[in-house]
Length: 292
Image 1 (cartoon, rainbow, N blue to C red):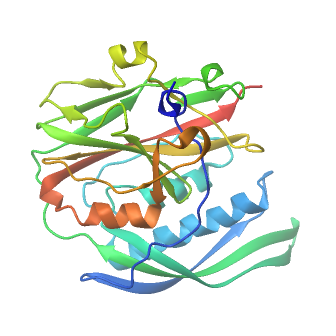
Image 2: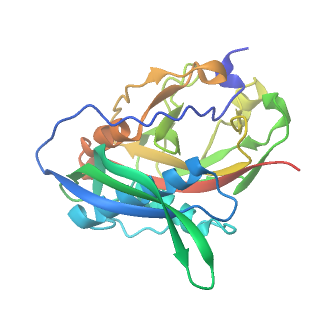
């Protein structure tokens, strides 16, 4: 059985900037971000929180917040602030996109706060290349994305033990669909894949991905988590384009070796190169947790 039939998201954190030195309509900006080590979060979680905050602030400073006015709601627990920063940093309808970033300064700082005690912070100074979006979106071209649930459980090491994700996509125009999962600063191409080399949408006809026939033959998207990770928020996104626009990505590893993977910077560079009139986007955050 092909590995694509068995895994949805196998995560390899690749904290590497896109290989680009600048482009028309782009601007380097230096931003600072701080994250508190608290609430049971690990040092790596705290550092990622600071990264998300820095990327979001860079886009806000150069290009504004959004161009389509869509909102993304995430049901969360004590990590709500972190989730909000994550979604804002990677949202696919932003007015600008972070194509590359370089760490200027980083480090841990301890401070004593009256009535609270000792607090540990991670301070990050980042130099970010932000590309502004150009052109005008077609108001008649829109796409929606829904999932069969907003929380999914990982119950074991075998993919068949874990919850299955089924997507439902509707486009207002005939379009080619690209579906990705964004985790940290890595982007995983769920479709097209070796079993679905092209995914098409018919105008105003809802489409399940994978559909019942493909699921019956063994193609299923199932959640997974790396060792030592108890839960995380992932962002599923669909990009509908009037014509096919290949998304170049190297193959992943392990159970994701048939799935394309690229950095968030490279994905943003691909997205910003598509005229806004030629694409429509939608995104849905989901929560993946280990079953207790």
